[in-house]
Amino acid sequence: MSEFIANTQLPLAVGTDSGPLLLQQCGECHAVSYPPRELCGHCLVDALSWQPQPDAGQLLATTTLHHSLEPALQQQLPIVIGSIKLAAGPVAIAYLSPPSAAIGSAVTVTIGRDSAGNPVLQARPTNPQEQQP
Amino acid sequence: MTDRPPNNYRDVVLAAPVSYGYSKQSDKPARWFIGSVLRELCRTAGIDKTAIDGAAISSFGLAPDSVSFLTQHYGISLRWLEQLPFGGASGVIALRRAARAVQCGDAEIVACIGGDSAAAGSFRELVADFSSFSNAAAYPYGAAGPNAPFALITAAYMERYGVTREAFGALAVAQRYNAQHYPAALLGDKPLSLDDYLNARPIAAPLHLFDCVMPCAGGEGFLVMREQRAIELGLAYVTIAAADERHNAFADDPVQLRSGWSEFGDQLYQRAGLGRADIDLVQTYDDYPVISALQLEGLGFFGEGEFNQFAASTATTFDGGGLPHNTSGGQLSGGQAGSAAGYLGVVETLRQLTGTAGANQVANARHGLVSGYGMINYDRGLCSTACILSRGGHHE
Image (tube, rainbow over all chains, first blue to last red; front, side, top):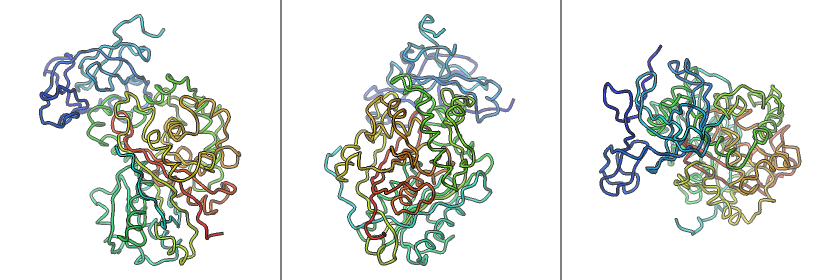
């Protein structure tokens, strides 16, 4: 399989397959920023550091991908991803597994690794009974 | 943000619509398409290139060049030059910038051009490194390019309002019909029925094949000048009744189900002195049908959440007597020529309002609305624009 290098910038310790949700947070105004950036997206101060965040989120939408531009990912199709309103504030796109959560349902978000070893956001239904049949 | 309206665009006109070189693939660089449009603009207007003293140019494919280098490629000397990296919002932004330059005397004739090529593999290269946010927070999740965020927006819009695939399909099928009457549309030779649309293979569900544009090569352009100059040159022209733009509107909405159109739409009609019923044709930026729906909704052609009813009750073909929409087939049936797609709506409206459209001519078109949308960052497109153009008085 060809390699797929995705620079998500998410912090995940070398040698570990999963970890808690860490996002950039401002030491000045405490706003959480995502996607990663250089200055606080709220107060523009240079005081961001990666801090643990609540792992809760609400599923805004999902899509089942049947097409990928990267050969390394094409073998895994279909791939299910979702957009999530994080309790910490920002909206994030994450892999969704199991893939059958309903829009509006609660999800739990952690940092894991994709098949190529890149650190990525992964979401799973918080209450499995909210899964669609 | 201030409520003070911008100045009007009195005395400034658009003329010389050019669409050029559409093809499914090309080994020629973007420079070839932009330069070819420049040549055709001069030919259409009957002017020498030395008469052009300003240019506003958009392209995704200029690297390593910027537009300043193009002046030497084309042997032109300018006193006003803009590079407008706003994707599908570039055309309306170009006319706004160019109109002010002409109005204020910084330039006399401005060439506004969008052009891009389509070499094998170039689309992947573009979307794999589109923006820092996209690179970090969208592309890693399946590497689906713009299909992914737009599938998510489509899914949320369908869920929120109960919008059906049939409603999106109605727009796509009407555009294909329009494309069948516009010879340059790359998919104009392939009929599309609603069944074809509904039964197409899934790409990024709920998006299926005919929800997605086909990347292609091509160029679009028009000239901006004073009305008096257009009259002297004997050119048919249109005037700018109103125009506006927003960047990152409604930033706190978790899903982009509206954008700047909802913010400036009412004022746009007010400044134009027109109502929605006065609009004879609309061009939206149709990278996906849902985005056309958001523009039509935000600009008041139907109420919030009423897209199903609009699609079921309104003919959007050029000759259907309803609301002619994307009258040359748009990108969905014509192809998406990179940044040229952001100029397509302006150029097609210019053809329509000057009565030079050909077989897809809308009868007695007086006022056209052009809407733009561009620059998907990771979860939404950040730029939204619209303008109302009106038929000029001296070409009949």
